[in-house]
Image (cartoon, rainbow over all chains, first blue to last red; front, side):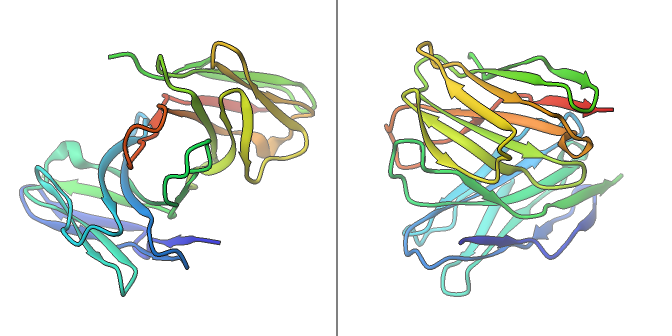
Length: 118
Length: 115
C-alpha cells in the first residue's frame, strides 16, 4: 500500500518570504501522480499543484512550485512571496496511474499547518 | 462554473441514529469519491463509484452504505451512528477520462456531529 508522510506538523513564515513544505511517499509503482492540496479554515479542499511521475520537469503554478525527486520519493512544495491568504493546512497526496473506472483514490499525508507572520 | 454540491452542510445526530449525506457531482462527471476527515486528521478514502457501479472501497464501516443513482448523484447512508463518526465528509467528482490528470473536484463537505 502506498503511504504519504509529512514530517512537519506546523511551519511558519514571514509574509513575503519563501517556505518549503516537505513530503515523502512510498510506492512500488513507476508511474503515479502527486498533488498538493490546501485546506483553509473554511475546510474546502483546494488543489494547489500537481505532478506526474514520469515528467522530469518540476511543476510550477505562479508562486507555487515543487521539487520532485523520484529516486528519493520526495515531493516538496515551495511557496514564494508568502501571503496572508496562504495560511492553511497543506496536504500532500498520492494517486495511482489513471485506470479509469473510479479506481483513482487519493492517499493523503497528515498535513502541515502553515502560519503566515505579518 | 458549476461545483460539487453536498447536502446538508451540517448535520447533528444522536448516537444510534441514521444519517444520509448527498452529493451532486459536476454535470457530466461520472465518477464520485467519498472521503472522511476526522478532527485534526487527513481525509481518508471511503468508497467510489463509476457509472453507477461501486468501483473501489476503502476503510468504510459495514454500518455505512452508499450508491450512485442514474443522474450520477450519490448518497452515503450511515446507520447506528457512533461518536467516532463525527467528521467532515467530502464528496469529490471527476469527469470521464479525458486527461491523464483526471482531477478530482471536491465539494464543500458535510460536517456530521454525533452527540
